[in-house]
Every structure is written in C-alpha cells, then in structure tokens.
Length: 456
Image 1: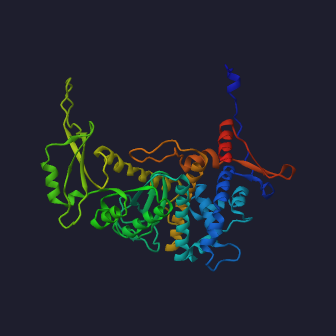
Image 2: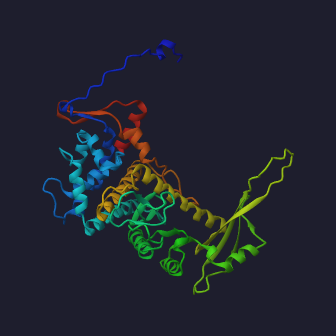
Image 3: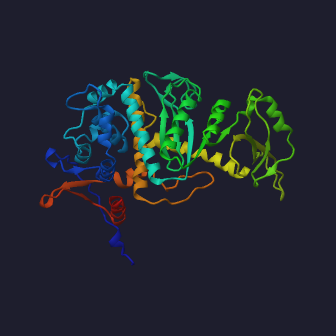
C-alpha cells in the first residue's frame, strides 16, 4: 500500500503540559506486563514457600519478613537496584496487587527486616531457590545434566560484614564477596551458591559444595548422566577422584604452568594431531608426582596469527607468522578429543549467566551492612534470574537438542529484553460489570506475545 506524505508526516510542535494525577487515579499502572509473572508466582506458590522460610523469625506484626523478600524479588524483576528506588513505584496498583499489599513498606522497614534475618532463614531461602531449579529439571526429565562451577566477585565501596579485600580484576583494592556458583547448562539457571568473603581461594569450600549439588541432582534425576566442568582452581586429586567415584563425567583445566616437567613435555612435542585449521592436540599419560590416580590428559593448542609490526609490504604473498595458545584438560570422558574440547569450552556460557544476572538482576549490588541481609539480597537476585528462565520454559517448547558444548535447550530472552518489551507497559485496572480487567494499549505483536504467556 502506497502512502501519501500527508499520511506519514505530522507537524507537531507544541510540547504538552505535564500533569501528575492524584490518588483517585490509582488504577493506572506502569508495569502492566507484570501480570505474566503474577501467574507464575501463583502456580509455584512463591509466597507460601517464602512464608515457610521465615516463619521462625520474630517479626513486625505489620510487615512480615516473607513479604519483604517477596517485594525484593519483584523489585529486581522490575529492574530497580537500590532499596530506596521503591519510592518511584510505591503506589503502583499492579505491584501492590502482585504482592497482595495495600501499602508497600518504606526503606527503613526493609533495611531493618534484612538486618534481622538469621542463618536459618538464609539456609531455608537458599534451599527454596535450589528446589525451584530441581523441580524444573525433574519436570523435564533430562537424560543428561551438565553442572558448571565457578566463583564470581561481588564488589562494594562500603564496609559490609563478611567482605574482604582480595583478588579483584576490575576494582582493585575494593572489598568484596566471592561466592561460588553452580549453574545448569541445559536451563541456564543458577542451581546453588556458596557465599564466601572476597579474600579466599577459588577452591575454598568447593569440595563439599560440589558434592552437595551432585547429591541434590541425583536425588531428583537418578537416571540422568551427570557432567561437571571446572577450571584450574579446582585441580586437585581429591576433587577429581570424588567426581569419578560418583560416576560424574568431568573436565577440568590443568594449571600446567605450575608443573615444570609437564611444561617441558609440551615444549618438546613435535607431532600434534589435527582437529581443524585452528586447533590441534595430543594425549599423554601424565599426572603430578604425588598423585596416586591418573586421568586422561588432553593437551590442545590454538593457532593464531601474530600482528605484523612496522610497514606493511604490499606483496601478493605476504609472509605471516603464527603462535600458539596452549590449554591442558584432564577428564574421565571417553569421546574423541574434539568433542571433549568442545564440551570443556562450553563452560564459557556460565560467564554469560553471571553477566546477565549482574546486569539485569543486580546480583553484584550489596545493599546493607549485615552479612545475612546481603545474602538474602544475593539469593533474591538469583531467584529473579531463575524465575525469568522458568517463565520462558513454562511457556515455550525446547528449541534445540543436546550439543557438544551443551548449549541451553531454549532460546532464552534476557530479563532486560522482557522488561522492555512486556513488563514496562502502561495499563489500567478496571472492573466492567464487576470483573477485574487489565487494559493495555498494545499493538498486534505485543498482543500476540502476551496471549502466548497467558496461555502458557
């Protein structure tokens, strides 16, 4: 259809006046799309589960701890960071309806509640978060579950309880926490976390944490083949033997620079097997001198071009030199070297989970000075991320099967994308003929997507 210029161009020059409506316009909402999460919260019984986690605390008669934590999850889903950002939406009717509250708590009440939680409440909340992921795995009945383990730094400028100055690549000298995370590659969710101060080694508390994660998954999916991917910080005999004895297929990076004898073996190697134009490898029977048990060792190298310095010679055949980056992988997996290498390199997807959780769920923010309060906030950020994944898995079918790198099985949208497309939508709550209705001004594309989530 051909349009005239007058159908397209609209000469608008007048700037409208701004008028803020008073309390009698309480039916207006800026977060109409939150209704899709309301359905999910109701199906999972989030509020009921939270109540069980915090029931043992001595609480304010008006605002219970489980209501505060439920608010915190929604606060992060909406994209807010600081606790006092609640002032920008405290009267939003959709937020209050999802929470089941006529009035949101003020910042002082929220901070005071977070400062009164104890270790038992944190443990219960952490178990709740873990069980939501396990419930999804049990529903999907996956034949293979891949667990990735790694730590991530959460920095702060304040002196919060339990923080310490440790290795921090981005903010040197800043105090931080350094929790250890376990993520599930198939669902791109965070299964569990082990909270630690920022000055500990990567492997601190890793062995019991890894064992507990494996035990939890085995308890729900006894028939599934379990896999684990870990980096060089976890390279020790006890950890690898424990994984092997549990029947878990694993790959781990080897810090070969710490072993001069092994470095000489690699440097002296002349014959490398070809994988593709970039990668080549060889296998060897090596183990540290003090180890009693050895595993399959795969040495891979990546060819990359060396940048040419100085003036460029404009010849038809320009000479190029190359150098190699080396990596050593220890594993108990049996497939060909290429598949083992691709499997191990797939653990990079965990960094994407961390980046998304920090950017859109405020995982790296430390709001209060108490340790348990910050742990509650951290788990709430994990909950916001996991629930976003749960919403999409509950709505859509799997898009792909198992790949060599163990990519997630769904084509997930980030929480930031859902927030911009669906959640932050203006709407009005009305009651025609006594029936509660949410009216959203939606174009055809938005209407179709909302209907998909509503049907799911």
